[in-house]
Amino acid sequence: MIKPAMMIPAALSGWTSEQKHVVAASFLGWSLDAFDFFLLVFVLKDIAAEFHTDISNVTLAILLTLAMRPVGAFIFGRAADRWGRRPTLMADILLYSVLEFASGFAPSLIALIVLRALYGVAMGGEWGVGASLTMESIPPRARGFVSGLLQSGYPAGYFLASIVYGALFPYIGWRGMFMIGVIPALLVFYIRRSVPESPTWSGQAVLERGSTLTVLKSQWRLGLYAIVLMTAFNFFSHGTQDLYPTFLQLEHKLSPHAVGAIAVIYNIGAICGGILFGALSESFGRRRCIIVAALLSLPVIPLWAFSNTATLLAIGAFLMQFMVQGAWGVVPVHLNEISPDTARGTFPGFVYQLGNLIASVNATLQAGIASHLGGNYGLALASVAASVAIIIALLTAVGTEAKGVVFGQPRPAVP
Image (tube, rainbow, N blue to C red):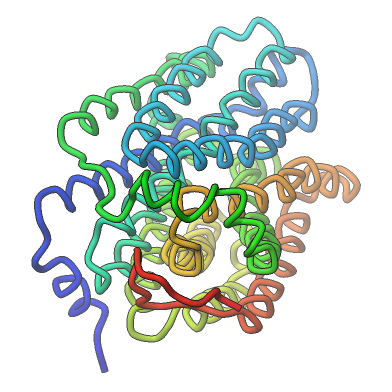
Protein backbone atom coordinates (compact mmCIF):
# COMPACT_ATOMS: atom_id res chain seq x y z
CA MET A 1 0.00 0.00 0.00
CA ILE A 2 1.27 3.47 -0.91
CA LYS A 3 1.54 5.78 2.08
CA PRO A 4 0.71 9.48 1.69
CA ALA A 5 4.10 10.43 3.15
CA MET A 6 5.75 8.50 0.29
CA MET A 7 3.61 10.19 -2.38
CA ILE A 8 4.62 13.74 -1.52
CA PRO A 9 8.39 13.47 -2.22
CA ALA A 10 7.63 11.59 -5.46
CA ALA A 11 5.18 14.28 -6.52
CA LEU A 12 7.75 17.03 -5.92
CA SER A 13 10.74 15.37 -7.58
CA GLY A 14 12.13 16.73 -10.85
CA TRP A 15 10.42 20.11 -10.69
CA THR A 16 11.86 23.20 -12.36
CA SER A 17 12.18 26.46 -10.45
CA GLU A 18 9.51 27.99 -12.70
CA GLN A 19 7.03 25.26 -11.73
CA LYS A 20 7.69 25.88 -8.05
CA HIS A 21 7.11 29.60 -8.51
CA VAL A 22 3.80 28.93 -10.27
CA VAL A 23 2.54 26.75 -7.41
CA ALA A 24 3.72 29.25 -4.79
CA ALA A 25 2.07 32.18 -6.54
CA SER A 26 -1.24 30.40 -7.09
CA PHE A 27 -1.30 29.12 -3.52
CA LEU A 28 -0.59 32.59 -2.12
CA GLY A 29 -3.11 34.20 -4.46
CA TRP A 30 -5.91 31.94 -3.24
CA SER A 31 -4.75 32.10 0.40
CA LEU A 32 -4.72 35.88 0.48
CA ASP A 33 -8.01 36.06 -1.40
CA ALA A 34 -9.59 33.83 1.25
CA PHE A 35 -7.87 35.88 3.97
CA ASP A 36 -9.59 39.00 2.68
CA PHE A 37 -12.95 37.23 2.45
CA PHE A 38 -12.91 35.66 5.90
CA LEU A 39 -11.98 38.86 7.72
CA LEU A 40 -15.66 39.76 7.34
CA VAL A 41 -17.06 36.66 9.05
CA PHE A 42 -15.28 37.52 12.30
CA VAL A 43 -16.76 41.01 12.56
CA LEU A 44 -20.41 40.57 11.58
CA LYS A 45 -21.54 41.38 15.11
CA ASP A 46 -19.36 44.51 15.32
CA ILE A 47 -20.45 45.87 11.94
CA ALA A 48 -24.08 45.31 12.91
CA ALA A 49 -23.50 47.24 16.14
CA GLU A 50 -21.84 50.20 14.40
CA PHE A 51 -24.54 50.53 11.75
CA HIS A 52 -27.38 49.84 14.23
CA THR A 53 -28.79 46.77 12.48
CA ASP A 54 -28.92 43.04 13.09
CA ILE A 55 -26.52 40.33 11.96
CA SER A 56 -28.84 38.87 9.33
CA ASN A 57 -28.74 42.21 7.45
CA VAL A 58 -24.94 42.29 7.54
CA THR A 59 -24.80 38.75 6.14
CA LEU A 60 -26.13 40.27 2.91
CA ALA A 61 -22.54 41.37 2.36
CA ILE A 62 -21.47 37.70 2.39
CA LEU A 63 -24.39 36.75 0.15
CA LEU A 64 -23.52 39.38 -2.47
CA THR A 65 -19.81 38.58 -2.32
CA LEU A 66 -20.58 34.97 -3.14
CA ALA A 67 -23.29 35.87 -5.64
CA MET A 68 -20.96 38.10 -7.70
CA ARG A 69 -18.15 35.56 -7.90
CA PRO A 70 -19.53 33.88 -11.08
CA VAL A 71 -19.36 37.24 -12.83
CA GLY A 72 -15.68 37.50 -11.98
CA ALA A 73 -15.03 33.87 -12.87
CA PHE A 74 -16.50 34.42 -16.33
CA ILE A 75 -14.85 37.79 -17.01
CA PHE A 76 -11.39 36.85 -15.76
CA GLY A 77 -11.68 33.29 -17.08
CA ARG A 78 -12.37 34.49 -20.62
CA ALA A 79 -9.51 36.97 -20.29
CA ALA A 80 -7.21 34.13 -19.19
CA ASP A 81 -8.28 31.95 -22.12
CA ARG A 82 -7.82 34.79 -24.59
CA TRP A 83 -4.80 36.75 -23.28
CA GLY A 84 -3.07 34.32 -20.94
CA ARG A 85 -3.23 33.14 -17.33
CA ARG A 86 -0.34 35.19 -15.92
CA PRO A 87 -1.39 38.79 -16.76
CA THR A 88 -5.00 38.02 -15.84
CA LEU A 89 -3.95 36.67 -12.44
CA MET A 90 -1.95 39.81 -11.68
CA ALA A 91 -4.82 42.12 -12.60
CA ASP A 92 -7.25 40.10 -10.49
CA ILE A 93 -5.09 40.10 -7.35
CA LEU A 94 -4.50 43.84 -7.59
CA LEU A 95 -8.25 44.50 -7.93
CA TYR A 96 -9.38 42.41 -4.96
CA SER A 97 -6.67 43.95 -2.74
CA VAL A 98 -7.75 47.51 -3.53
CA LEU A 99 -11.43 46.73 -2.96
CA GLU A 100 -10.67 45.05 0.37
CA PHE A 101 -8.77 48.15 1.51
CA ALA A 102 -11.65 50.39 0.43
CA SER A 103 -14.08 48.33 2.51
CA GLY A 104 -12.43 49.70 5.64
CA PHE A 105 -13.66 53.20 4.75
CA ALA A 106 -17.31 52.30 4.12
CA PRO A 107 -19.47 55.10 5.59
CA SER A 108 -22.65 53.02 5.73
CA LEU A 109 -23.87 49.44 5.53
CA ILE A 110 -25.11 50.01 1.97
CA ALA A 111 -21.68 51.26 0.89
CA LEU A 112 -20.03 48.27 2.53
CA ILE A 113 -22.40 45.85 0.79
CA VAL A 114 -21.66 47.48 -2.59
CA LEU A 115 -17.91 47.24 -2.01
CA ARG A 116 -18.21 43.59 -0.97
CA ALA A 117 -20.22 42.84 -4.09
CA LEU A 118 -17.46 44.37 -6.24
CA TYR A 119 -14.90 42.45 -4.20
CA GLY A 120 -16.85 39.30 -5.04
CA VAL A 121 -16.25 39.94 -8.76
CA ALA A 122 -12.50 40.04 -8.18
CA MET A 123 -12.54 37.10 -5.79
CA GLY A 124 -14.44 35.02 -8.31
CA GLY A 125 -11.70 35.36 -10.89
CA GLU A 126 -8.72 34.21 -8.84
CA TRP A 127 -9.46 30.54 -8.22
CA GLY A 128 -10.12 29.45 -11.80
CA VAL A 129 -7.22 31.37 -13.31
CA GLY A 130 -4.75 30.28 -10.63
CA ALA A 131 -5.86 26.65 -10.74
CA SER A 132 -5.62 26.41 -14.54
CA LEU A 133 -2.18 28.05 -14.55
CA THR A 134 -1.00 25.60 -11.89
CA MET A 135 -2.44 22.38 -13.30
CA GLU A 136 -1.15 23.17 -16.79
CA SER A 137 2.35 23.92 -15.50
CA ILE A 138 3.14 21.00 -13.15
CA PRO A 139 4.01 17.34 -13.91
CA PRO A 140 0.84 15.19 -14.25
CA ARG A 141 1.95 12.88 -11.42
CA ALA A 142 1.90 15.85 -9.03
CA ARG A 143 -1.64 17.02 -9.75
CA GLY A 144 -3.34 15.26 -6.83
CA PHE A 145 -0.96 16.54 -4.19
CA VAL A 146 -0.81 20.05 -5.65
CA SER A 147 -4.61 20.12 -5.91
CA GLY A 148 -4.83 19.52 -2.18
CA LEU A 149 -2.09 22.05 -1.53
CA LEU A 150 -3.74 24.68 -3.72
CA GLN A 151 -7.17 24.19 -2.14
CA SER A 152 -5.62 24.29 1.32
CA GLY A 153 -4.87 27.90 0.51
CA TYR A 154 -8.51 28.62 1.33
CA PRO A 155 -8.31 27.43 4.96
CA ALA A 156 -4.80 28.88 5.14
CA GLY A 157 -6.34 32.27 4.39
CA TYR A 158 -8.98 31.62 7.06
CA PHE A 159 -6.13 30.66 9.38
CA LEU A 160 -4.39 34.00 8.77
CA ALA A 161 -7.66 35.87 9.28
CA SER A 162 -8.12 34.01 12.58
CA ILE A 163 -4.70 35.13 13.78
CA VAL A 164 -5.30 38.74 12.77
CA TYR A 165 -8.70 38.75 14.49
CA GLY A 166 -7.41 37.19 17.71
CA ALA A 167 -4.29 39.35 17.91
CA LEU A 168 -5.21 42.72 16.39
CA PHE A 169 -8.97 43.20 16.45
CA PRO A 170 -9.09 44.70 19.98
CA TYR A 171 -6.65 47.39 18.79
CA ILE A 172 -7.61 48.15 15.18
CA GLY A 173 -11.32 47.28 15.04
CA TRP A 174 -13.17 45.94 12.03
CA ARG A 175 -12.13 48.81 9.77
CA GLY A 176 -8.45 48.26 10.47
CA MET A 177 -8.81 44.57 9.65
CA PHE A 178 -10.10 45.41 6.17
CA MET A 179 -7.25 47.87 5.63
CA ILE A 180 -4.73 45.11 6.31
CA GLY A 181 -6.34 43.31 3.38
CA VAL A 182 -4.37 45.44 0.90
CA ILE A 183 -1.26 43.34 1.58
CA PRO A 184 -1.96 40.78 -1.21
CA ALA A 185 -1.25 43.51 -3.79
CA LEU A 186 2.46 42.92 -3.13
CA LEU A 187 2.08 39.45 -4.65
CA VAL A 188 1.76 41.04 -8.11
CA PHE A 189 5.44 42.00 -8.04
CA TYR A 190 6.44 38.40 -7.32
CA ILE A 191 4.29 37.04 -10.15
CA ARG A 192 5.66 39.61 -12.60
CA ARG A 193 9.26 38.72 -11.72
CA SER A 194 9.16 34.95 -11.23
CA VAL A 195 6.06 33.29 -12.71
CA PRO A 196 5.98 32.20 -16.40
CA GLU A 197 2.93 31.77 -18.59
CA SER A 198 1.23 28.36 -18.81
CA PRO A 199 3.14 26.08 -21.21
CA THR A 200 -0.07 24.70 -22.72
CA TRP A 201 -1.89 28.01 -23.21
CA SER A 202 -1.79 29.39 -26.73
CA GLY A 203 -3.71 32.38 -27.98
CA GLN A 204 -3.42 31.01 -31.51
CA ALA A 205 -4.93 27.67 -30.45
CA VAL A 206 -7.87 29.49 -28.88
CA LEU A 207 -8.53 31.29 -32.15
CA GLU A 208 -8.23 28.08 -34.15
CA ARG A 209 -10.54 25.96 -31.96
CA GLY A 210 -13.24 28.56 -31.41
CA SER A 211 -14.24 30.97 -28.66
CA THR A 212 -14.68 30.02 -25.04
CA LEU A 213 -18.45 30.37 -25.41
CA THR A 214 -18.46 27.95 -28.34
CA VAL A 215 -16.54 25.36 -26.35
CA LEU A 216 -18.76 25.79 -23.28
CA LYS A 217 -21.94 25.41 -25.34
CA SER A 218 -20.67 22.11 -26.75
CA GLN A 219 -20.10 20.83 -23.20
CA TRP A 220 -23.34 22.05 -21.62
CA ARG A 221 -24.27 18.68 -20.06
CA LEU A 222 -20.92 18.42 -18.33
CA GLY A 223 -21.21 22.05 -17.24
CA LEU A 224 -24.69 21.56 -15.77
CA TYR A 225 -23.55 18.54 -13.76
CA ALA A 226 -20.49 20.41 -12.50
CA ILE A 227 -22.60 23.39 -11.42
CA VAL A 228 -24.93 21.18 -9.36
CA LEU A 229 -21.95 19.40 -7.79
CA MET A 230 -20.22 22.67 -6.93
CA THR A 231 -23.43 24.06 -5.44
CA ALA A 232 -23.40 21.20 -2.96
CA PHE A 233 -19.68 21.68 -2.34
CA ASN A 234 -20.12 25.38 -1.60
CA PHE A 235 -22.96 24.72 0.82
CA PHE A 236 -20.59 22.20 2.45
CA SER A 237 -17.75 24.69 2.96
CA HIS A 238 -19.68 27.89 3.66
CA GLY A 239 -22.26 26.01 5.70
CA THR A 240 -19.55 24.81 8.09
CA GLN A 241 -17.40 27.97 8.14
CA ASP A 242 -19.12 31.30 7.63
CA LEU A 243 -21.32 31.41 10.74
CA TYR A 244 -19.20 29.18 12.96
CA PRO A 245 -17.45 32.16 14.65
CA THR A 246 -20.86 33.77 15.20
CA PHE A 247 -22.13 30.47 16.64
CA LEU A 248 -19.20 30.41 19.08
CA GLN A 249 -19.71 34.05 20.04
CA LEU A 250 -23.47 34.08 20.52
CA GLU A 251 -24.36 30.56 21.62
CA HIS A 252 -21.27 29.78 23.69
CA LYS A 253 -20.30 33.35 24.70
CA LEU A 254 -16.64 32.81 23.81
CA SER A 255 -14.22 35.73 23.73
CA PRO A 256 -12.54 36.98 20.53
CA HIS A 257 -9.32 35.31 21.68
CA ALA A 258 -11.06 31.93 22.18
CA VAL A 259 -12.93 32.19 18.88
CA GLY A 260 -9.70 33.04 17.09
CA ALA A 261 -7.90 30.11 18.75
CA ILE A 262 -10.60 27.61 17.74
CA ALA A 263 -10.57 29.00 14.20
CA VAL A 264 -6.81 28.46 14.04
CA ILE A 265 -7.28 24.86 15.19
CA TYR A 266 -9.97 23.96 12.68
CA ASN A 267 -8.09 25.59 9.84
CA ILE A 268 -5.05 23.48 10.65
CA GLY A 269 -7.37 20.49 10.27
CA ALA A 270 -8.64 21.87 6.96
CA ILE A 271 -5.13 22.30 5.57
CA CYS A 272 -4.11 18.78 6.63
CA GLY A 273 -7.28 17.22 5.22
CA GLY A 274 -7.02 19.01 1.88
CA ILE A 275 -3.42 17.96 1.29
CA LEU A 276 -3.97 14.37 2.47
CA PHE A 277 -7.04 13.61 0.36
CA GLY A 278 -5.61 15.46 -2.62
CA ALA A 279 -2.49 13.28 -2.47
CA LEU A 280 -4.54 10.11 -1.93
CA SER A 281 -6.62 10.88 -5.02
CA GLU A 282 -3.55 10.25 -7.17
CA SER A 283 -3.60 6.59 -6.09
CA PHE A 284 -7.26 5.92 -5.30
CA GLY A 285 -9.06 8.17 -7.76
CA ARG A 286 -10.70 11.60 -7.54
CA ARG A 287 -14.30 10.51 -6.99
CA ARG A 288 -13.53 7.83 -4.42
CA CYS A 289 -11.60 10.24 -2.19
CA ILE A 290 -14.34 12.88 -2.39
CA ILE A 291 -17.02 10.37 -1.39
CA VAL A 292 -15.02 9.00 1.54
CA ALA A 293 -14.20 12.46 2.94
CA ALA A 294 -17.81 13.68 2.61
CA LEU A 295 -19.29 10.64 4.36
CA LEU A 296 -16.71 10.71 7.16
CA SER A 297 -17.95 14.19 8.11
CA LEU A 298 -21.34 12.79 9.21
CA PRO A 299 -20.25 11.10 12.48
CA VAL A 300 -18.33 14.26 13.42
CA ILE A 301 -21.36 16.58 13.32
CA PRO A 302 -22.61 15.99 16.90
CA LEU A 303 -19.17 16.80 18.34
CA TRP A 304 -18.79 19.82 16.08
CA ALA A 305 -22.22 21.41 16.58
CA PHE A 306 -23.56 20.21 19.94
CA SER A 307 -20.58 20.05 22.33
CA ASN A 308 -20.74 22.09 25.51
CA THR A 309 -17.10 22.97 26.12
CA ALA A 310 -14.56 24.95 24.13
CA THR A 311 -12.19 21.97 24.07
CA LEU A 312 -14.73 19.58 22.56
CA LEU A 313 -15.90 22.23 20.11
CA ALA A 314 -12.29 22.73 18.97
CA ILE A 315 -11.81 18.97 18.48
CA GLY A 316 -15.07 18.68 16.58
CA ALA A 317 -14.24 21.70 14.43
CA PHE A 318 -10.78 20.29 13.61
CA LEU A 319 -12.25 16.96 12.49
CA MET A 320 -15.11 18.56 10.58
CA GLN A 321 -12.86 20.85 8.54
CA PHE A 322 -10.40 17.97 8.00
CA MET A 323 -13.18 16.11 6.17
CA VAL A 324 -14.83 19.12 4.49
CA GLN A 325 -11.59 20.42 3.04
CA GLY A 326 -10.42 16.87 2.43
CA ALA A 327 -13.24 16.54 -0.10
CA TRP A 328 -12.45 20.01 -1.42
CA GLY A 329 -8.78 19.15 -1.83
CA VAL A 330 -9.64 17.01 -4.87
CA VAL A 331 -11.78 19.68 -6.56
CA PRO A 332 -9.10 21.77 -8.36
CA VAL A 333 -7.55 18.80 -10.14
CA HIS A 334 -10.91 17.09 -10.76
CA LEU A 335 -12.48 20.13 -12.45
CA ASN A 336 -9.36 20.95 -14.46
CA GLU A 337 -9.00 17.40 -15.73
CA ILE A 338 -12.58 17.19 -17.00
CA SER A 339 -12.42 20.70 -18.48
CA PRO A 340 -12.06 21.35 -22.24
CA ASP A 341 -8.51 22.52 -23.00
CA THR A 342 -9.33 25.85 -24.63
CA ALA A 343 -11.81 26.78 -21.91
CA ARG A 344 -9.76 25.70 -18.88
CA GLY A 345 -9.28 29.28 -17.75
CA THR A 346 -13.07 29.69 -17.67
CA PHE A 347 -14.76 26.32 -17.12
CA PRO A 348 -13.47 25.25 -13.65
CA GLY A 349 -13.81 28.69 -12.10
CA PHE A 350 -17.14 29.47 -13.75
CA VAL A 351 -18.91 26.27 -12.65
CA TYR A 352 -17.34 26.61 -9.20
CA GLN A 353 -18.56 30.17 -8.81
CA LEU A 354 -22.01 29.48 -10.24
CA GLY A 355 -22.27 26.90 -7.47
CA ASN A 356 -21.24 29.69 -5.13
CA LEU A 357 -23.98 31.89 -6.53
CA ILE A 358 -26.65 29.32 -5.76
CA ALA A 359 -25.13 28.64 -2.33
CA SER A 360 -24.69 32.33 -1.55
CA VAL A 361 -27.93 32.25 0.45
CA ASN A 362 -26.25 29.99 2.99
CA ALA A 363 -25.30 32.54 5.67
CA THR A 364 -28.68 34.29 5.50
CA LEU A 365 -30.46 30.93 5.39
CA GLN A 366 -28.63 29.56 8.42
CA ALA A 367 -29.06 32.80 10.37
CA GLY A 368 -32.78 32.70 9.56
CA ILE A 369 -33.08 29.05 10.63
CA ALA A 370 -31.25 29.82 13.87
CA SER A 371 -33.54 32.80 14.55
CA HIS A 372 -36.60 30.63 13.90
CA LEU A 373 -35.23 28.06 16.35
CA GLY A 374 -34.74 30.64 19.08
CA GLY A 375 -31.06 31.31 18.39
CA ASN A 376 -30.03 27.66 18.00
CA TYR A 377 -27.12 28.10 15.58
CA GLY A 378 -25.81 24.60 16.30
CA LEU A 379 -28.90 22.90 14.87
CA ALA A 380 -28.96 25.27 11.88
CA LEU A 381 -25.32 24.47 11.05
CA ALA A 382 -25.74 20.72 11.58
CA SER A 383 -28.80 20.38 9.37
CA VAL A 384 -27.11 21.99 6.38
CA ALA A 385 -23.82 20.13 6.85
CA ALA A 386 -25.41 16.68 7.08
CA SER A 387 -27.68 17.24 4.08
CA VAL A 388 -25.01 18.43 1.68
CA ALA A 389 -22.48 15.77 2.75
CA ILE A 390 -24.89 13.07 1.60
CA ILE A 391 -25.74 14.98 -1.60
CA ILE A 392 -22.05 15.38 -2.50
CA ALA A 393 -21.43 11.65 -2.07
CA LEU A 394 -24.39 10.78 -4.32
CA LEU A 395 -23.57 13.31 -7.03
CA THR A 396 -19.92 12.31 -7.12
CA ALA A 397 -20.81 8.62 -7.34
CA VAL A 398 -22.85 9.14 -10.53
CA GLY A 399 -20.29 11.44 -12.15
CA THR A 400 -17.12 10.87 -14.15
CA GLU A 401 -13.43 11.67 -13.87
CA ALA A 402 -10.42 12.03 -16.17
CA LYS A 403 -7.51 11.34 -13.81
CA GLY A 404 -4.14 11.71 -15.50
CA VAL A 405 -5.45 13.13 -18.80
CA VAL A 406 -2.76 14.87 -20.86
CA PHE A 407 -3.50 18.57 -21.27
CA GLY A 408 -3.17 20.21 -24.66
CA GLN A 409 -3.84 17.08 -26.73
CA PRO A 410 -7.04 16.23 -28.63
CA ARG A 411 -9.38 13.94 -26.69
CA PRO A 412 -13.01 12.88 -26.88
CA ALA A 413 -15.58 14.91 -25.03
CA VAL A 414 -16.18 13.86 -21.43
CA PRO A 415 -19.66 12.27 -21.19
